[in-house]
Amino acid sequence: MARYSAFLGRRVEVQYRAGDILLPASGTFVADSGRSIFLEQNFEQRGQHKHFRWEIPYQYLVRIEEKPDSGASANGISAGATPKAAPETPVASKPDDQPLGAVAAASAGGAPTLLPLPPRPKTA
View 1 (cartoon, one colour):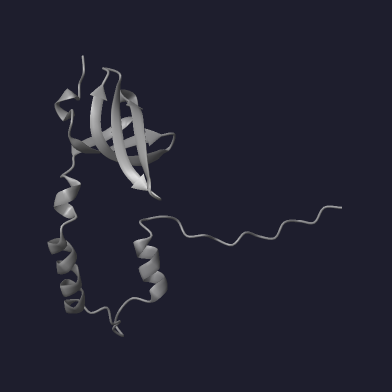
View 2: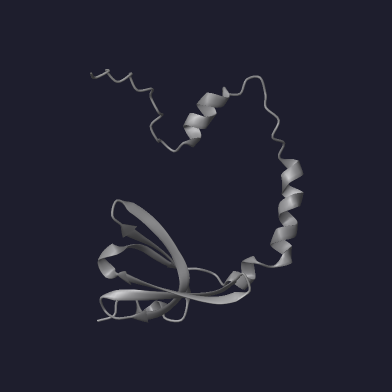
């Protein structure tokens, strides 16, 4: 039985597992075989029309959600609102702010910092 058939013909955003990493995919949900879902994306690159289709097996799906149409987010209103918001939020640093290294480490998302490796022993 097709679990995700309610998404047929809709724009979706999917997160799926590939080994140890999670990958995003977005496109039009075109098919559900009962074992896999199929996403399709049509675009133009360097003047050529391209067609891309994903097959993602159910067991690798992590998240699937409907995405609003790309036409709604590509209108001129949202692009015009972004420059107005930028001057209102100054980026000047204050003396009581954290040092740059601490800010960079905090923004790393919990990734461990790199530690220097000891020199390797010389072999004869």
